[in-house]
Image (cartoon, rainbow, N blue to C red; front, side, top):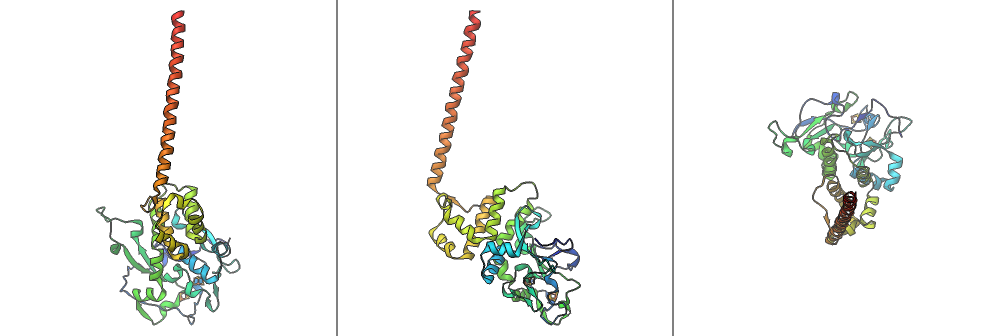
Amino acid sequence: MNKENSNIKEKTLFGMDKNPSSIEPKKLTLDSRIKFRCHPGVKCFTACCGGIKIILTPYDILQLTRRLGMPAHEFLHQYTTPVYLEKTDMPGVAIKLREEDNKCPFVTPEGCTVYSDRPTACRYYPVGMADFHEGGSRDASGKENTPEEEKFFFLVKEDHCKGFEEDKEWTVREWRADQGVDVRDEMNKEWLRLVMRRKSFGHQATLSEQAKRMFFMASTDLNTFRRFIFESSFLETYEIEEEVLEKIKEDDVELMLFSFKYLAATLFGAQFLKIRDDKIKEKTAQMKKRQDENVLRSVKEYEELKTSMEKAKTKSDAE
Ligand code: SF4
Ligand code: SF4
């Protein structure tokens, strides 16, 4: 585990409530213009790769494990530390900073060694996105806001970041496309929604340990999740189309997207999984058997009670 630094900053992934003092109080749209450039020539090069908390999404983990050619469990052990996501009880992981200098293990003086596969949070910086739809916000009259009303962007301006002194100007849209954020947003969308949905529940409902374990496993280790689908009783219980099975057997991204739907169904009861007819029949038969047993037991208890009452009556009549 890395040393926890109480001043540690979190690169924004979930919205605006991280490092509020560095956030410019101005809502930006995709067409807003920003002046910023980050390149190896800036004085602060790699300054933002230390003393930070970088939460990893399932897609980040998938890309990094491919890049490093290591199985997820090894990657998790070597490069991550466990965290709770967004002040919820949902377990996730963040990059484990180096003991010796409190920096990201992938940074060198020459820059990021996993640059083209860097995590989503690194790509956002310094343009954050607030998407309140993830939590399902409502306006003053209680009407649910539409996604477009809820989404806006903001700048995270930290004193040490000299990128704002550079001459390059672009729109937020251009910046995001350049950083490959759009693709990441699409890949992370459903997973972020699960976390924000959980957050909107507050502490009223608790997640079972089993649900937490499943969320962690599906979010961090797709190979184990694949084994769970294909090597447990899962397919005996649920009806999954052959075409879907073919896809998730081979394709990690398809499997990841499937896992988000599976988690939404198991954590929040979303309609996605269909239980097999034979399982329903089996369950119904079990319930009926239990009911029959209960009825028989009550009949027996009633008969016993009746007999003992009759005996008591006969005895008192005789006295
Ligand atoms: S992954 Fe790369 S960009 Fe992100 S903090 Fe580490 S070194 Fe910096
Ligand atoms: S602090 Fe800003 S300019 Fe400097 S390396 Fe990080 S993002 Fe680039």
